[in-house]
Amino acid sequence: MTDILWTSAEAAAATEGRATRAFEVTGVSIDTRTLAKGDLFVALKDVRDGHDFVRAALDKGAAAALVSRIPEGCSDKDPLLVVPDVLEGLTALGRAGRARTRAKVVGVTGSVGKTSTKEMLRKVLAAQGRVHAAEASYNNHWGVPLTLARMPADTDFAVIEIGMNHPGEIAPLAKLARPHVAVITTVAPAHLEAFENLDGIAREKAAIFEGVEPGGTAVVPLGLPVSGLLEAAGRGHGHHILTFGPDPEADWRLIHAKVTADATVVEASHKGADGLIHPLLFKLRTQGTHFAQNALAVLAVAAAAGADTAVAALDLGQWLPAGGRGMRERIVLDVVDDHLSFDLIDDAYNANPTSVGAALDMLAAAQPKDGVGRKAAGRRIAILGDMLELGPDEIAMHAALAGHPAMAQVTTVHCVGPRMKALWEALPRAKRGEWHETAEEMVPELRHLADAGDVLLVKGSKGIKVALLVDAIRKLGQAVAHHNRGTE
Image (cartoon, rainbow, N blue to C red; front, side):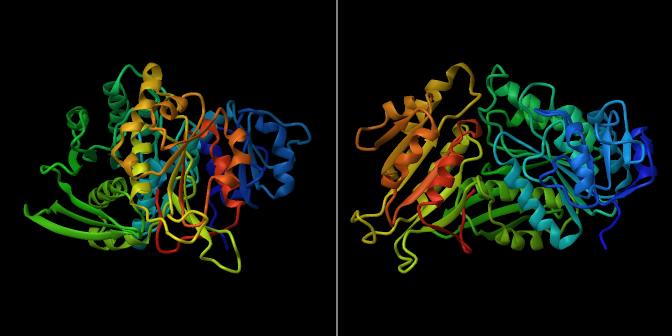
């Protein structure tokens, strides 16, 4: 039997709303397409008004709906929780969910790697207690309260992802989540349209420390131009500071990350409670030094949250990235001869200069296969879409990717979007592939771009829709997930 998450009395007390009748819910949903029987349907207003779907949600099995009025097709006989404002009601429910738990709560933010770090934490903490973590990238003004409202009261560890697009967004969400530990994965040029410079982004990221519980821990990366600013912010709120990164002074220090065709082997060290430096060696089932950096952040957070870091380091080897964030899969072109295949790295969820550089490093480390396709040698092929929200220097940032060291190992670069044309023009002619204004225009050309033995990377901001290319590439053959290797 599924545990009861909220009774009507509890939900009404939390939101100061009016329950039309008694109910018990086992989950919380904002989408009728994914709604499960027993959920509380939250009628948020976005592109469409959620009140238009309340009747359908109840008919599908929702145990109740959170509304600001009686929707069309419903009445007081239906199980409804009526509040003045639905989003404020959801926020109040999330606040109550946080208040009733004894869980160690972790807040995660950063320009790159938030979701991967959150999912690593979900994986390593699951062996040490009941874990609740945000689904997908639910990290905004409705995603954070939704995650908190969904949290079972007996949770041991909660991992809350907190994101932003504009100044002033992180602090209120951090104060709602009230983490015991907060980590900033990194600070990089992203959302520069809304910020003057990198320091502005760093200050906004550091606002997560405003919500950390008294006596809590701020986990920050060393070796960045803004690391001092981040540390100062954490100390300014009276928090204990833990640092990670390649800097020799880091509490959790990345000494070396060896990227192979199948994995990343991480040599590191950490400062123990005994004051001594302890060596650490672990393996990730995915490629990328940036994943090694995220993993050290995870271990620092686990230590601050009271988890066994030795067990956590072992469990990191079981984590694999999700689709759109560097997941690697094999596309089999011939079901009779599975040697006729190529590898796809799906990193299509988002992009900025730092994350594109990391993706190119992954591609450079991948090993194509020679002699299996039409071409004698397997190729490393990048399909790169526009990086959005970079501000007035966006064209220069796109062109600068041509000088990334990993480009030396890339055979061909295809570009999508008006901004990526700057990269296409900056590339040597030998590396320059196709350029298209939109992802839709490139789809018909894909069958000519990949061959057996190749490794293809697809990377771009969500708004440029290069995920369409990932779907089209999968349809060139039969997709088979890599069970022993992956990427972001």
